[in-house]
Length: 157
Ligand code: HEM
Image (spheres, rainbow, N blue to C red):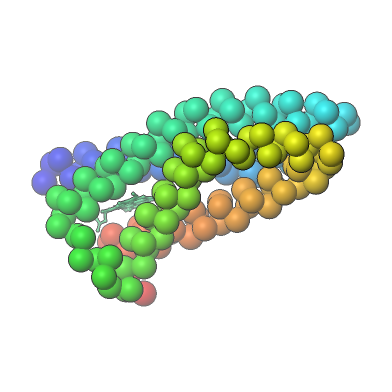
């Protein structure tokens, strides 16, 4: 099943770019931005970095989804979704769905405008909220990656 192996490699490359990028934004860029002197600069810098990454992440999130569903189809693994022992499969789809909705629907429709409004009244509060949101998403994603590797290699718990 060479095609599944190739899909698996592409799946992981996409995850490395996507979750690695989220890690960088969460653990490095946001804390640095929050320490900038001028509150207005914090928002502008964050917006620039996040917008650039969000465009790239749209590609890696899509690639992760396509390769993930392709593997599920080729491994005939749909029935795993009926088995709670495969909770890491549900977790992968959940993480993917949350990012897809945020990137493709919520951000362009209302999240961006909401963030700018919030940033005008309280730049610190807006950045702090974004930081919390990133930490939650990153933590869930990391647990999912660990569990998926264990699960895919036969360790189910
Ligand atoms: C639509 C969403 C997704 C689907 C349908 C999907 C599906 C799959 C499938 C079928 C496998 C192979 C399992 C096996 O060999 O038994 C897999 C592996 C894996 N996936 Fe996903 N996935 C999705 C999203 C994600 C996300 C969001 C992450 C990370 C947060 C992720 C991380 C992984 C990892 C680390 C592996 C293990 C690769 C290995 O060690 O062989 N996947 N995925």
